[in-house]
Image (cartoon, rainbow, N blue to C red; front, side):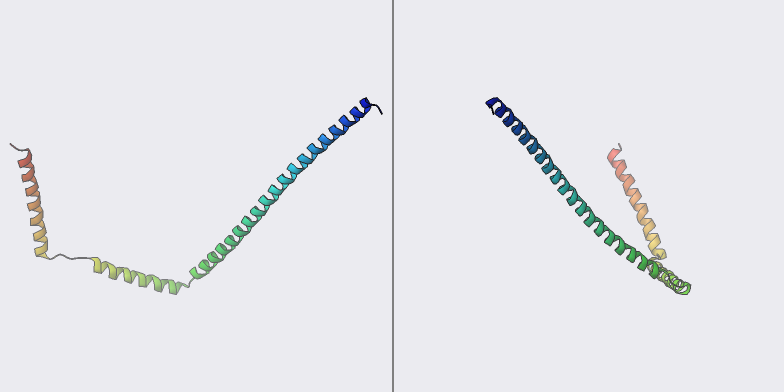
Length: 127
């Protein structure tokens, strides 16, 4: 072997080594990418599992509320009558009736208030 052939063979071996290194680097990059994808899939699977559990719990709660909401007509009528009666009692307790002398006193007070306001404006902006 001559040195020229030896140099060509070494250059070819060097080029093959570079190519092998590039391929290995690319494969390593692909491995990292696949690891990230698998991690994403795992986290999405876990999130979907939590959502499924939450959906099942909400469906069970809705079903329980719907079942509880089905009462017979007599019970609903009895509850409605009790609520109307409670509302009537509360309304009568809130209603205030003024006596005649309270009404007269309120009207006289309002008149005095309006006269004082007018007098104040007259003195403030008058002659």
